[in-house]
Length: 424
Image 1 (cartoon, helix red, strand yellow):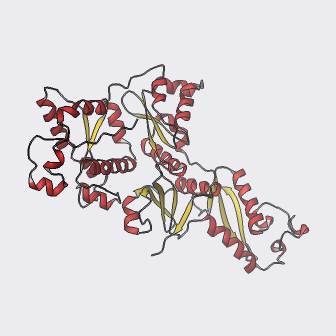
Image 2 (spheres, rainbow, N blue to C red):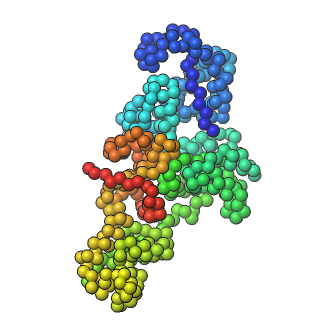
Image 3 (cartoon, rainbow, N blue to C red):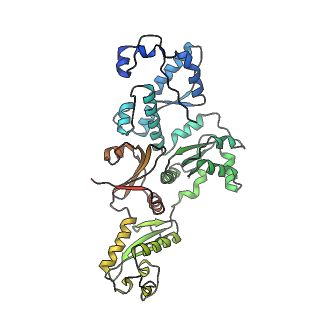
């Protein structure tokens, strides 16, 4: 549930000049504003069962406690400080003031030094910190500290609080530890399946789950990448099968004795450089069949026709004759190279842009010199091709065979993702 409360408060005293200069708020603006005791009940309601997140939370929390103490009320809430979290998660930053952090991370800020503007900027900063925290320590600590999470045979109260959105979800035990990580285009439905399935694994999982947290991604590709990275990082006990490589076969090329570039799908071999990878042989074979049609390749030279003579398409005038050296190697190889370039990231610099978590946001993946560098989110008004801005919003992620497989495989099936090539 998301709620918002914004109000000026009459401090019942004159505003000091430096505060007027800093915020633009003067005593005249506050004469008709409610006094603290008039908004106190709303503050209690809106913070009930919540963790107060603030930039330098110790200061804000102390002010709140002092004001409530004057009313004879003992105000106690758990707090999280985005200054301390920023220092832990982003130790490379030059400054941890809210103004400089928002500029460095490309966070748009309105009404600077006003409560509403700073609060919204802190929300966006906190979202970035959650995204960068691949070990999910922030979430696990919060769940561990929250006494309302207890084992229950009826998980309906958990499911009711989960939205039907695209993202990554985390199942926790009573100690806050993550025991399963998953992704879905509809988190609510997927978690419900975990809790209603009668399989032996699901029943065992149901007995241990005390809480579910989630992270919206907007993009299914981002969800796939975060799921893979976080399973490897956290090693949840119920994700053992997903820690293995997500592909078994790969596309390789070689030049035959006649100078023709041959393509072949075979079992993945880490010692050889793959063009792209596949979940199984059948998907690799289907890919080659598509390339044969799209680029007019020879079935024999992609390993799908074992004949020693002309391939089966040559008889139907659908092959230019590379299989019997009727078409020159130079001409044929140009088309094969198109396939390799279109499906390999080698030495390429580009970004992939997909849906964001909100209508005014996009997700972005960065590939540099064929290497996956990481992902992030940006406001639609931002100049995303600016390298400095781009690097500041990217959460660095490991480049490995699985991440490249996830990206390449997803792009083959989803053509709507926008690609922008980067120039130096």
